[in-house]
Length: 302
Image (cartoon, rainbow, N blue to C red; front, side, top):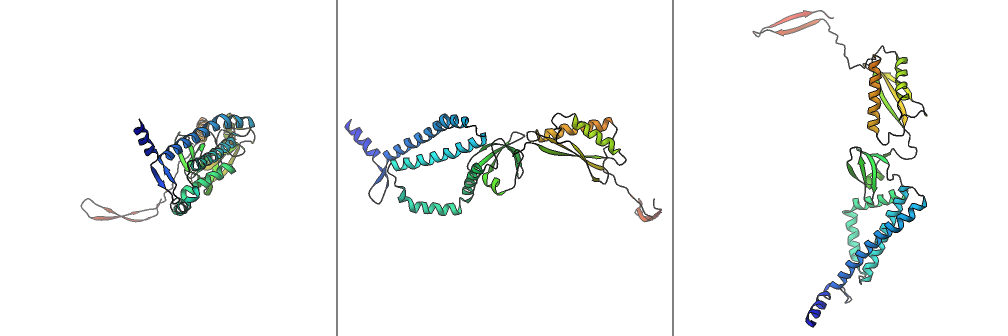
């Protein structure tokens, strides 16, 4: 029994790292560090779920602000807990100055994007240019924000596809936030009709479609705008205001176009297709006969 205890002591006392001053980081210290880190993460999770959620929900703050506070406090608690755990097992962080310098060089060259995304995440959480639930458009990504982390933000599209966007793209790029501030959004629908159409009748039909669509607001009033003369059509726009465009922009426009098309067909208003007039001038052109001989034919212009 004593031999087993002696062997165990030798194992846990085995030095993994020796410092210049004679101190050593042993297997026992490694076990202690693992236990302390587990306790730190468990304590942080319990604190966040049992205390932060309960307290913040009673403050009346907006969900986006509560989420930002939780994220900042989470990383602060984890950083402090890891630091204290390292100190508790005897790891002197001041002796890691050389390693910190090497890491700094690595950050400067190889980890620029990670650091940029991390700093951008802090800016997003602090300034709140976007928040949970906002519908945004950045680059080719269009969807609703479901999660904001320090490195990236998750955006779910209308097709239920989750796209991970680096936070630096949200800070350095141009972001369209459809949900920021006033939820009312104006949508313009292009409508082209044939030349000769009664434009007053067309205007009344389009306004009638807008009036019978529940999702369209009465104030501000819908408008029909004459945008110009096209090659084959008179071009108009139906401009309407709605609060549902943020949630379902494509569905909203599709339903409205179905209603417009139905009214135009019912009132026999033509939707033109591109047309070209061909003018022939008099001249000479060559026809190739079957035997290979060429013959000339003169035609008069039409």
